[in-house]
Length: 558
RNA sequence: GCGCCCGUAGCUCAGCCGGAUAGAGCGCCGGGCUUCGAACCCGUAGGCCGCAGGUUCGAAUCCUGCCGGGCGCGCCA
Image (tube, rainbow, N blue to C red; front, side, top):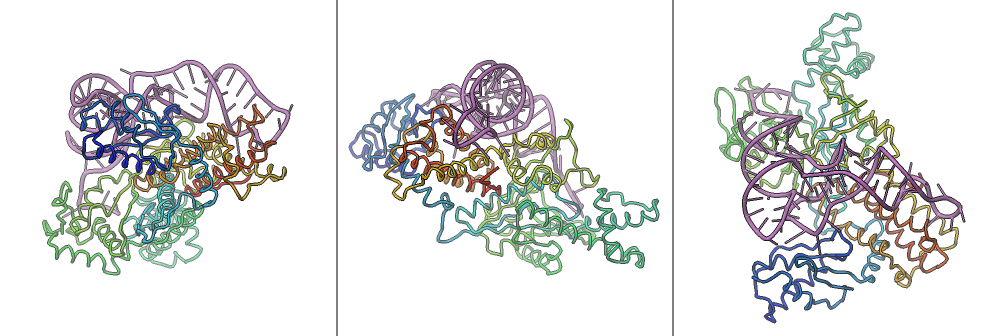
């Protein structure tokens, strides 16, 4: 609809220029927006305000000229008014809105989607938890955001690959093994030392138990046993992580293993490439990359003087490999505590001749957990945290996914677990799901009355005249462009707000019928009932599609 | 010290590519079920949009400085 209005405005301006009503000038950037006040019409533009300065005339005058000369051949407007400082307000004819209802109910679950001829291949890496412990709430937030962005991108016609990067080449896997081994030894000898920076969670003891029933640790040298514990511990943690993500309805397409970068020689190869580009140098026995030439604060070490590679070295190699796999765009979702890595990563990409827009990093602020009114500081090393699994057991997948997306990703999220547990019916997700279930219920009622949606929809739709009805349609019209905006900004939380808004307007509409039976959806007036069923069906479709994109169920009964 | 994020109703947060009277949920107070689902709806109260400047016809929104909270600044992982 905005496109249609914009088209009309541009044609109108052209005409005004030709007729000399306005001076020829480059088009300023103007907005066509949905006013928050219903008296201001369905759409409004500030075009005349933005033209005031180049035209050197009063905005109000310009608005009048534009309004009087509108090139609306298809006549989509019911009224056009100038108002305020120089806004032009448009009210769209009901027929246009009715047409949209037909579109929604015919496209059904494809409403809002796009089929593109050539799909853009996008890689999204998220969660990427170290396999040294179970997933916690922060990972849940990342999973909810990443998976939802993937669902939306793919719905909007892009090819998406979900990727999980397994950090398994560093010291932490070794420490995991030492922790497990120590817990096993402590069963017989409580005095056996526990590693200083070991992992304290109870799951370590469980791992020790499991592994020791599978292999005979007592027959091995400690070094060999620790190695086994590392390997088996990592495998078991990965299996558990994968399982928990599955419960959370997040499936990854690619599990990329850091240690493979070394065993396949990819790290060495990428170093040679950078060497050839003359981006590396040796200093103090270490190998450095000149990231400071590309925007970083300082140069970074890739190979330490002891010969070990830094994480940064394998991270670069990993991203180069990703780039080599032909993605036109890569998105990384990181915890906000890694924000300091963005400049160096972007610099390293530039140093390798990769466009700086290729990689986008989305930061998610950390999740603060509150229990019994107190904040619980989470720490994997100290073994104190609430796992994603526990949360899912308490509140369910639907509520968890929805709640994680009720805040902007760059805002900290205070998660009061008692609140979500106790007041689970106050959860906004139920509010939205209830609207869906309610429509389904209405359709059962209609069926019982022998009323159904006719094949010739346009014959009954002109009975839809209530403001509440038009306002619902108007909101549903925004759905596709909202999805597009989310694709560009990654603000997935806007979808949860949108659905809550749509549900609210539907509940409000439904309640009109409680006061006045003429306003019920299923009434004695058959054509009117049929038209309202079409409207209710469209609401059901958009809510279901939206919930689907959030990875949340749309139940027919609750 | 430097960098990034945040500061909006009692609480948790939307709104922030400048626009018309600043919103929601929860909480408080008061209403609404003989007929489509009350997991709902309606109403009341509650705001120096952290502070101070600046840009603009117009600032919660953009710029600068300050205050407060979080995070990050290793040849750690």
